Every structure is written in structure tokens, then in C-alpha cells.
Amino acid sequence: MTTNGVKVNGHGNTQNIEYFGDNGQHKTEDDNRSTYESLVQTADFLKRLVPFKPEIGIICGSGMGSLADALRDKIEVPYERIPHFPRSTVKGHAGALVFGYLADVPVVCMKGRFHYYEGYPLWKCSLPVRVMKLLGASHLIATNAAGGLNPNYRVGDVMLVKDHINLMGFAGNNPLQGPNDERFGPRFPPMNQAYDRDLITAAKKVAQEVGLPIHEGVYTCLGGPNFETVSELRMLKMLGADTVGMSTVHEVITARHCDMTVFAFSLITNECITDYDCQENPNHEEVIDVGKMREEVLKNFVQRVVKHIGGK
Ligand SMILES: O=P(O)(O)O[C@H]1O[C@H](CO)[C@@H](O)[C@H]1O
Ligand SMILES: Nc1nc2[nH]cnc2c(=O)[nH]1
Image (cartoon, rainbow, N blue to C red):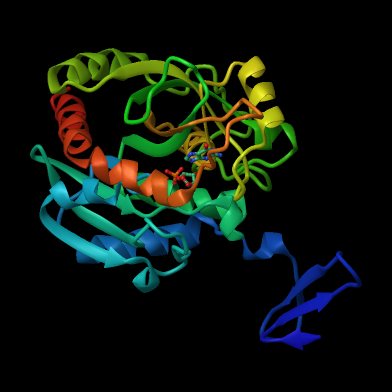
């Protein structure tokens, strides 16, 4: 079957999707991969709309889109207007880049991120990070809603991410797969200092000031969209993960590849269920509700972290 330049072959559960250019020439997934030049086009389009250079890129996690509402002199650009940009499909992820000033620091917020389970390859989920870099941002703040695996974590607490476990990477899936463009970064980037230690130290102080219960730990990302089984969670705990989600890791890898300084945190939206007798179920509504419940304190927290970065 061929429709709109896409041919789907296959029987039963296996399908191979082939792409065709305008002249019927065969294209592969890799031909559709964004290039340095296409991302420069995206950045140039945005530069024409925004009269300042963002210093920090902020990714709002599920239910945390209101972080972007705290910006002054906002310019909001819906994803569907931005060339080469994916579209948001998940509840709690509005789908717009919001430019403005937070604590007098110029920033750009992703009000809505892209997830692997939406059907986007990891390079596409992380594409906005490269656009932020091309816009001039030197720092990335990635926020996420996550399940708390560490038994000391409570719903509403925040965990500063000190490290991650790239589980999808173990299975051979990585946002940096494919040809490497040195203009972004090296073929083999180190990842042992992915999360900036100075920012973690500063953020701990800020959390105390705003009365936010804080932890420091290890995040892991699964592909989703289902929440985990009891056995999977027990395994992740043994591996050393403190929180579990479906985002952030590939964004951070992409940011470190292009030499951005990274700060990330998880809002604990649910306690992971590691007991077969527990009758509760995690669900996305609860995740979004906790984000909303903590919106004021998180705005305050992020604003102060941004101020710290801006004042450096
Ligand atoms: O990581 P963010 O986007 O904050 O969202 C988390 O919450 C959603 C599940 O409720 C998943 O998308 C998971 O990744
Ligand atoms: N994978 C995963 N993602 C989440 N996002 C919010 N809570 C959870 C969770 O428990 N598991």
C-alpha cells in the first residue's frame, strides 16, 4: 500500500515502513532525520520572532506547564507553527515554546515535551534541545513527573537528579545514533558528569529557602506508555534507580553532547507499587494533579535556580 509517499509492507505483526521522495526515490528513516541545516532553519525562524537570546532552556514536565506562565514579556509559539518541529499529543503537555524573562533572565520554555511512546524516535524527542542550543542557550533545566521508587520519597517531594540509568540505551536505542555532526558535538561524548554538581548544591539551598522537601538521586527512563509491573520496579530498585519516568534521559544526553550545562529534577507524583497486595493503580490524572498541586512552590523554586544561573 502506498499513501502520501509512505509505503507500508508487512504481514501479521511486522510492518516495514518505507518512505519515498517527491520523485519516487526510495528514502529511509535516516533520510528523514533532522540535519544541522534544518535545525538552523528552525532556530532562524524563531530568532525572527523573538528579540532576545534565551540563556536557559526549560522543559516542563507533565502537569508542570504552568512554570512557563511565570515568565515576563512572554512570546508563545505553538509547535505547529515551527518548521521541522513535532507536535504534542499528551494531556498535560500544551505544545508551545514560550520565550520570556524569569527572574530577569531570558529563557525559553517547552510547554510540552515529546516522548518515545508518542511514536517519535529519540532523536526527534530531543530535537528541541538542539534548537535551544542554536538559539544561544547555554543551560538546560529538565523537569519531569516521576514515580518514587526510593521508599523515603513522598508524593510532592522533589528529587534533584544526580545521575541517570539509560535503560533504552542498554537496548541499543540512543538519541545520538546515526551520523554524528561535529558541529553539535563529539561522536563519543562522556556522560559521567552529566548533571552539574554546583547547580545541585545551589538548588539544595534554594529548596530549603522555599520549603521544598528535597532529595538527590538517580532517575531512569523507560519507553512507556504503560506504568511498570511490580517485578520491573523491584529490578529497577536493585539497579539503583530512585525515580522512574518516560523522559529526560535522551534530552540530557543530547544537551551534554552539545556542551550545555544540565540541571534536572523529578517531582514525585506517585509512590511506585512494589507490593503485589496493593490494590492502587498509578494513573496519568494523578500525575497531572500532583503537578498542579505543587505548581506555586515549583515556580518559586525554578525561578530562584534560574536567578542563580543568570547571576553566575
Ligand atoms: O516525564 P514527563 O513528561 O514529566 O511525564 C511523565 O508522566 C507521564 C506519565 O504519567 C509520562 O509521560 C512520564 O514521562
Ligand atoms: N514510568 C513511569 N513514569 C511515570 N511518570 C509519573 N509516574 C511514573 C511512574 O510511576 N512510572
